[in-house]
Length: 383
Image (cartoon, rainbow, N blue to C red):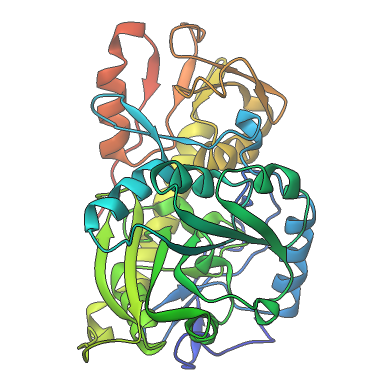
């Protein structure tokens, strides 16, 4: 790490974490990426982050040039499954339901969805709020026709924020803020696009409960609930809703308003143990990889998202197939391998589960009727 030694949250010195540079990385749209990335923790605020070097910025541009949203499901949004019951719901709909239950939305208003992808959230929000006008924002126009066909969408904006001439009542960043190298100043720039008392909805991975987040090459900041809340407060927002895992498993869901109506007491950075969390994740991921490397016979992998893509890329030719419960993905191929439903998966094969130990255990128990040979990861040694 030679080009940046300062935190992009607080400006303190960064400390690189050992053991990460040899890890196979994954893109946020679930494509295998290369090794050689860097992971660091701030010596001040303890935020885990990718150093924003010229090389990192170049790699991110390369990733975005070939970006394909939900490619494993033909563009259909990933379903979020209850680990115990198997009930599924699209992530966007879960977030919209939580937003509705909060009771802060007007019957009419203007919404801006930053990083709207192919319009999954716009579609879900519009169905529940037919009197709102919605705008999407993206880096390119590849999905413009699809997005602008969604009821309630006025346009897809392609270009800088500064060229927007509209003010909004709600700005949405779903899996967007973790990609942005200077999040505080970026959030400050959003405040100028909000009507007084306007709302900001943010959804990001939770590093405390999602070990695989650190493997995503184009994720710049790996937020905990404390660092996300602190970042919003420093940008002048008042956080009045921050849920860790209760809306979407392993994710942080936050609602804030601008300007802040009262002073907020920020949690002290000493409460954040970013280095400890990241080092536990690195060690556990290595342990999970070694478990897969020691498996014999035909090997399958449960899931087709970030964790499954990473493990398949790291294991290479040992892998023969994926197993997924998402009906939009079964019957397709990912990384050249077939995707089976649990019912149709080969019964004589080892099935690796790149999931947290508690989640893997619950899923294996729920799917016991299919007589699959699940391999459940061991818990972190100091869990």
